[in-house]
Every structure is written in structure tokens, then in C-alpha cells.
Image 1 (cartoon, rainbow over the protein chains, first blue to last red):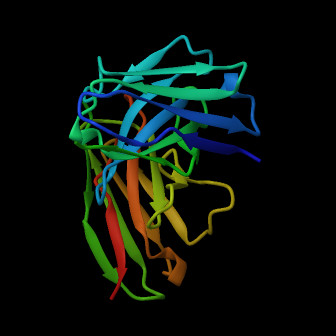
Image 2: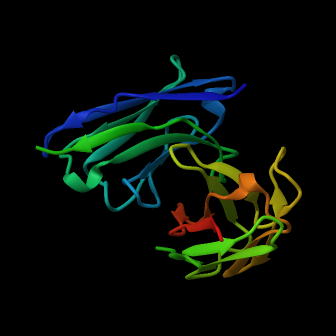
Image 3: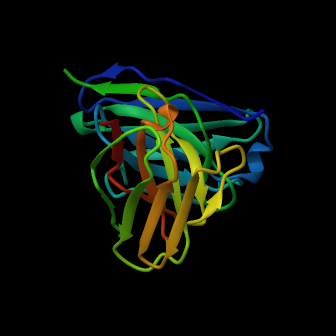
Length: 119
Length: 106
């Protein structure tokens, strides 16, 4: 059974940093692309970043480019999102999600972790 | 960037109704479109992929159609469990979600 378990969400001050983790179970982690998708309170879904199964290719939304870094550790079957220079508008529930194939739709999602950026 | 526009934003319907949600892409995305259902406090769940393919385990009352720029999600006979928010997503060039359609009880 595929499971994605996010952690690391917290309250952080503007300008601060945070690292999210997503532990993956039940599939060959290195064979699938993964993404982070966020949802601000009461708002819709926004794609944040993606990484190929090998970790060699990464992609970012313009809203986070240069501030966020996606990476993975295939030995630990874990996906990460390093978030720097956080802003109030980064406040959201962050979901990690697995792609069906290299650049396809998202077939499994984690339960989400809440990041709140506020002073 | 590809923009996705869903309509309506809110849809009021009753159990047993046939409902249709539309999604328009700002440029041709072929059939690289997915539909998700999200309930309050929960992660989204995949319903439809490649515009019209039903994900395994999803009830057959859900169907999708379209190609190019115009797509629809149809629920043939609304059930109580279907009241939720629905999102389309293109995966032709990076990933973009529609703004969502909240399906509520009339």
C-alpha cells in the first residue's frame, strides 16, 4: 500500500527557513517523480515543485523559484522541501504527492503538513 | 504558463442530479488533464486522468471528456458522498490547477 507521510510543518517568522519531509512507503521511490503542492487556507491547489525519480531534474513554480529547493534521498525513501526566505503568502498546507509516471498526474497524496509564516 | 479556468465556482445540486463541471485551458494541452475530488481537511483524490480515463476504484458515475482546450467532468447521478470540491489539473507543461468548483447541496 502506497503511503506518503509529511512532517516538518511549523510556525516560522517571515524571512525564516523550514525543511519539510515526506517519507514514502509501498513503492519503488526512485522510479517515480514526486511533487509538492500547497493549499493556502480557504484557497485552491497550487503546484510548488517537482523532482524526477532519480533526483536529477527539478522544477519550480515562479512563486518559489530561488527560495525553495526540492531534493530526495533514495536511500531513505524520503522527499524534502527546503524553504528559505519565507513570506506570509507561503502560509499553506503542503502536500507531497507521487506521479503516476515521469510527468503525469498525481495518483497518491500525503495528508499534508501546515506551514504558518507569521510574526 | 498555462492557465486553467473552471466553471462554475460553486454548483448547487440535489442527490440524483446530473452535474457537469467545465475546465478550459489557455492553450492546447491535448488530453493531458486530470480531475481530483477534495473533501474538507483531506488531501485530493484522483478521479479521472488523460481527460477521460477513470482511475481504478472510482465509481462509474464519474466521467470526463474533452481534448485540446475544453474539458468536462460529469457526475451522472449525484450521491451524498459526492458533495466536495473538484479541481482540474493540466500536466502538459509543468502543472496547473483550476481554481476549483465547490459542489454543494441545494
